[in-house]
Image (cartoon, rainbow, N blue to C red):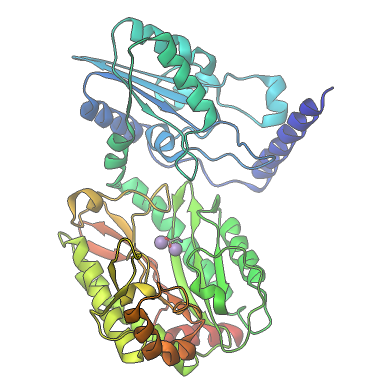
Length: 485
Ligand code: GLY
Ligand code: MN
Ligand code: MN
C-alpha cells in the first residue's frame, strides 16, 4: 500500500468517526429550509439568467488533511446539499427548463470511511430534483452544449483569496477545449444578488445562530480576568457554540487583548491578558450554515480604566447614532456617515486628531493624496450583510437602502496602535501633525474597542437581535454579576 493510500484511509477514517459521534450525541436536525424554498430560489435564478446553462460546482473534498467539509454558500443556498463533489446544472431555453443535481453515488465500501452519502435516490427524494452520479457531469454538459443550449454560465468554487480552485479550473478548461469558441460567463452575480434578501426561514436560522453567539459572550464575560490567556476564552466560547448545536465558528474567533485589541482580524489568541487592558472578543457561530457576528469589548480587570472608558463611550455613541439611522427604507450610507461624525468628534475631543474633518498626507511623492485623520483610528466599514457567509451579500449593497429581508451588522470601532504615527509618509504636514498628536497617542496607546451587533429587517421594522449588554456600565455589571455567582 502506498503512502498515499494510507493517508487517504486515515482521512476517511477520521470522517467516519466524526459522523458516528454526531449520531450518538444527537446532531441538530437537518436543514430547516423547505425543499419548496430551494426550488423557488432555483426558479428565480433561471428567470434572471435567460436562455442558457447555469452550472454550479459545489466544494470538493477539503484540501487539507483531516479538515471538515463545508459546502460553498451558493451551492448550499440553491440545493441544501452539503456533500463533497456535488454539482447543479440548470438549463433554460424559451419555455423549456430542466435541472439536474449530480451527487457522488452511494458506495458502502467508501462510506465505511467517509460516513454516509445521500446517493442519487435520497438526494432526489430530498430535493425533488432529477439526479445523476457526479461522474456524469462532463457528459451532461457536453450534450447540452452540443444541442445548442449555451451560453454556459458558471458558479465556481473560489478559495478565500478569490482564486479558482484548481479542480474546477481544470474541469472548465477542459470543457472549453472540447467546445471551441465557447466562452464561459460568470453566474456569481446572479446568485449573489438574490442571496441579499433573506427569507423568513433563513432569518429564523440566523436568529438561532445569533442567540448561541450571545450566550457564548455571556459565558465568557465572567471568565475574563488578569492572567487568563486569550485562548482560554476562545476555548470556552467555542465550547458553548458546539454545546448549543452550532456547526463551527463562522470565522476564526478573535480574542485580542492589549496591543492585540488594535489588530482588526487578530486570531492567534495566544497572549496572556493583563490588568487594565481591554480585550476585543469578535465571534460568531455558524448554525446550520448561518453566520452570526457579534463583538464586545471587555475590561480585563472588570472595570474600564478612565482612558479606555472614554474611547469605549465614543464607539458606543457612534453605534447608537448608526442604529438610529437604520430604519426600513433608510439610506445605508447615512448609517455610516452618522457613525463617522460621532467618531471624528470623539477623536478630536481626545486630542487624537486635529479636527473632525482634518486630513493628513497619505499618498507618495509621485502621487500625493490626502486622507481623513479619522481613518488612522477607524479603518474599516461600518458593517456588512450576514447569512451563509459571515460577510454575506445584502440587498442594500445594490439598492443603497435597508429593506425587509436585510440582515446586517453595525460595528464601529476605534483602534489606537502604539506606532500609528510612525508609519506616515514623511512630509512637512505629517511631521507637524505627528508632533501635535504624539502625547495623545501615547496616552491611549494599545486601546482597541469594537462593538458589533446583528440586525434583521422584517415587516415590523429593524430589529436588534444580538441583545446583550453593551453600555460600559452594563458590561462591567455583567462581568461582576457572573463572577459573584
Ligand atoms: N468578524 C469579522 C467582522 O466583524 O467583519
Ligand atoms: Mn462583522
Ligand atoms: Mn465581527
